[in-house]
Amino acid sequence: MRMAPDWPPSIPKMAGMTPSAFDIHGQPAAERVAPDGARVTAALHGGHVLSWRTADGVERLYLSSMAVFDGQAAIRGGVPVCFPQFNQRGPLPKHGLVRHLPWQLAAEDVPADALVLTRRDDDATRALWPAGFALRLSAQLAPQRLRIALEVRNTGDAPWSFTMALHTYLRVDDVTQARLEGLQGAARWDAVRDRRFPEDAPALRFGEEFDSVFSAPGAPLTLVQPRGQLTIAQSESCTETVVWNPGPQLAASLPDLPDDGWRQMLCVEAAHIDTPVTLAPGERWEAWQELRVAPA
Ligand code: TA6
Picture (cartoon, rainbow, N blue to C red):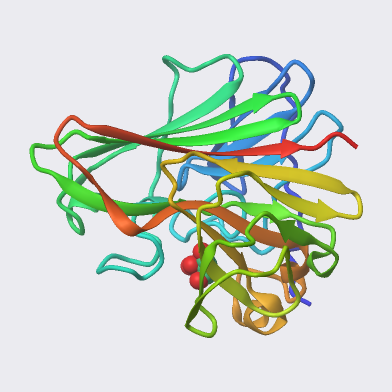
């Protein structure tokens, strides 16, 4: 099995309500610690939330032990921000531009319980996509809860369109023992088999490659595991939910995922894919996903 020898990285514990800046594997990172001890950590590369630990110390997000921290590659795990393109549905690199680029840590207008990262267009983005934009990613802590919000603004002088996803990797004890409830009745595109059908299962189960785009459910989803439940809600502005697990075969071919890494992760993504959002100059749009640990 392929495993990084120095994992997990030692993240300094710096409690306080000011975001702490440090680095993880040589990459700049920041952390917010809430009064109850919950903490959220993000890498500036990609504006990428890496970790959410609830007050009980339990890690709720999956981060691959083989994730590449070279300031170039997208990081495997956490919450990649896919913008302005989801997957390969367009001419841009897979999942867009910003997961490969450095963001900034915001210091102003930041709520006391949030970590906020920002990204604007620059020569690197305009070389591939001529849009003037500003992104603001907020990861906000509340007891047993994390809300990740992405604000998109058109700062240019022409309209442009985008698709997006908050590509959240949830940590699970064993995905084959987990089930995801709440998508029954949703329109589903099964990308593995290229089939479209209404989902009829009351709960999704995992074990083989699973890659599907669902029309957004009207109510939050529930991830059920033997150890407890997680509720996953998303803003109405997200018109789709994506569920992805590579399964054993695809996992073995991904160089930045341990062979058995697929067992510890499940991506449940708040997305806007099928009909792109168009923003006129000066317009803004917001999406969020909220994760809540259900009481035992
Ligand atoms: O959101 C699901 C998906 O689009 C899958 O098709 C799979 O490719 C996954 O994202 C991960 O993509 P990545 O480029 O990060 O390997």
